[in-house]
Length: 167
Length: 231
Image (cartoon, rainbow over all chains, first blue to last red; front, side, top):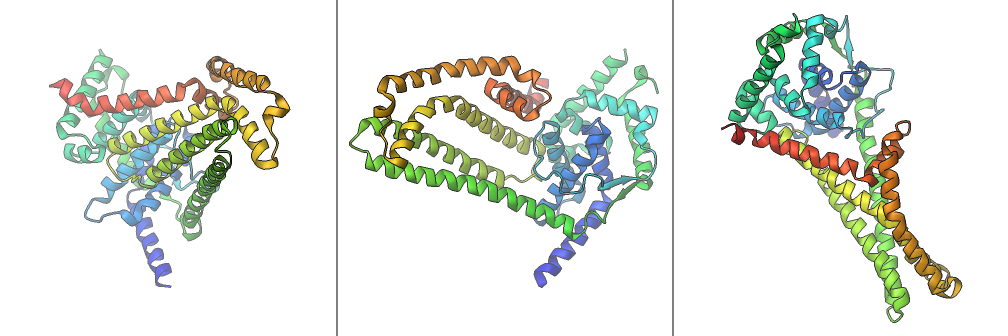
């Protein structure tokens, strides 16, 4: 009985935290799937992995850092055609993340932005996503598992590449 | 915004504007995420563990049966040799299966991205190498399997039924099939887009998937080491 109750309360806590950070789901899915049809599958994979890992979540870490690590790990594996064990757990006609209005990616500038992100490889894509989302270099380094100096080097390299692209 | 004007600051502004819109646009479908759906995740994983467990159990039973067969024919090299080849193959499969299961079970997706991706890709490369080896070695195993199965299951002597020359020719044909299989796989792997399973199998045999895994591992290493080059 107490196990059932604690599982239910863990689930409530999980759903509340997931709801507060649902934008991460959208941004990761939009950055790693150019086809809108694939996005619900990726979102589902991420949510499934988040829920499976939730009992190991250490509250001394920020939820967003923990969520980013899982979401990016799943997205990169998904992009590479791996990690689809939990497919069809959710009925195909339903979507975990519902979009109430027109997708912002339809906006011209954003569309171009997502196109530029899509030109990057899967690792630089993770890096730029974290940077655009306003994360500090030390947080990006912590999520990706590289040094802060390396984060700085890579960001300036991407800046240079964009500058070259605009010439 | 035009392409020729883009820079990282423009991108950041666009991203922030999107962020504000997303607050009102996105809704989590909590109905889908209630107890029954989330517990489906657990049962799907239990099913997967069950299937993998059954596979391992079959390998264990086969290894035990072959072990006992080896003991029974220890004085007859013509049966001992093919049985030993099969026994070693099953033990190698079993060892690989256990190693993969343990490694998958120990994967923590909340670890840093680079660490998990390196572990996953190494695992993938290991699995692909095992699949390629199993697929390519299987034509060679047919003859020992025939000899051992006939003797062990119904007590018949394959050497007496088929003659030693016939069995030897089968082994040689098995050897010839290996380069032929690689050639066919390389030729047809990219043409099988309508059948992803067959295509993936052909890519495994041709070694393309293994090359891709090795390529991604190098990409990960470069990503990690770039800082040193930049200095």
